[in-house]
Length: 593
Image 1 (tube, one colour):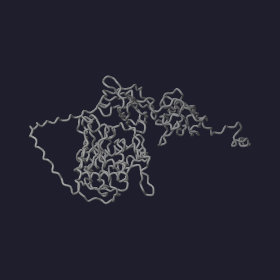
Image 2: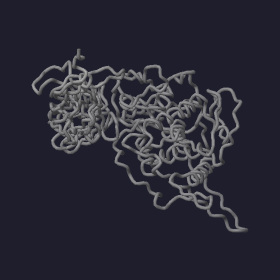
Image 3: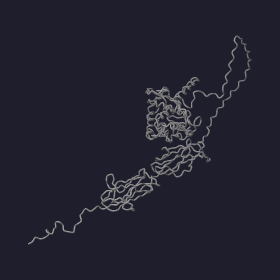
Image 4: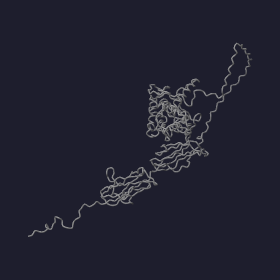
């Protein structure tokens, strides 16, 4: 959570009571999970007690750091642009509905990109704006440069386990400047270990910077859209928000701001946004004393008309020797209780088999890692993050390149099923312990090309043609792999002189290229989703005879098809045995003398 902005106001007992009542009324009127009936918002009884989410053990995007608890005003905002220069502390609906221009653009651009890349998530930009308001007051009221980078770093408290989560350094201080413990950073308050996999380049400058609102907004969008969540579904929206910071109060506060922004907002100049005044880790009044104070008895009134007997003055006591004031003993700094994560000495492969799959297939084996202490004992209930590294389009369930899994009683974290993409080659899946820097475990995975082990013709008609003509039928084949259709398999077709020929023929049947020239080898062919491949038209030159079409695929499947080219019929008439008409007997006789 960002450092406290502005001056915190101390309230008296009466003011505090009034404020508490106002906040309670506001919370009730703007509570999440409401249904609209006849224009009135009423909280559903079923949602009065939120159901705990399995992500409670996760530190979330922020390490469950403090956040701003200020709620939006009850009145709907009036979209009137602000003319104020510099940060304000206004509390009216107009001032609170305004979002600094660059920050607003970052939210809307991130939501648009998620709409294109993950349309099933249905991410509203107002949710990003609500989280930005709660986490940093819209980047400290929009104090950002033209490219979206905060003027000065926004850092949350040290997560040393004293009043906050206990997260030891994971980035060697690269992001938060602290090489001992982690701190939440930037306008969307990511902890370094989360940013390591969730970080995105949102402004196209070639780097992912948590202090840049464009980068942070896009990262937050992807974070909220993971696990296949559909944020138009109430249950998924709750899970997504709670995964960011696991607190029911946080859920209600974010939902309140999201609905407030949905009712209307407007753009204001950068640096002129209003700043929140209250944080979840602060109290406006001191805590109550542990020992109750006993009130003094009220004296009884004297009887009417009676006389009051003067009291006997007490004998003054002798002055005593003043006591030496004792030196107060400083309270020792509480030592954080070691968490399971603190006891992990290393991660190791928990018996993962060879990782290989054909393009488009799911890997048969799943990756598993085990967390152990220095003595080799398993550590349960710690989080292991699996991240896909390298030039690949392989992904975990939901199309994600990362997955966080909590270890079981045997200390084992089993990654979700991994599915190969279309890119072939090797890549790495890296297992890291969340919350503590220990050596990562790398798993090598290989994606091989789609393959077929059998090819057959779909028809059985003889393929014949007269020299110089065109074959009437096109050749169609079907590729299969282990009996199932082999789709998207690469194939090559070659016209050869015989079944055992190794090179393409230089005469006989041929295909045509794009310019109409004869070609006798076709590469770059591919079966369709059903494993079918129909070849182009075949033509014959003036060479008669029997030829062979050979089709091969990735994986070694081969099919040969016989082609017959016949000689054209002769157009020369057969000579007769008798004399020709021009040589009739009368004409051949000599004239008489």
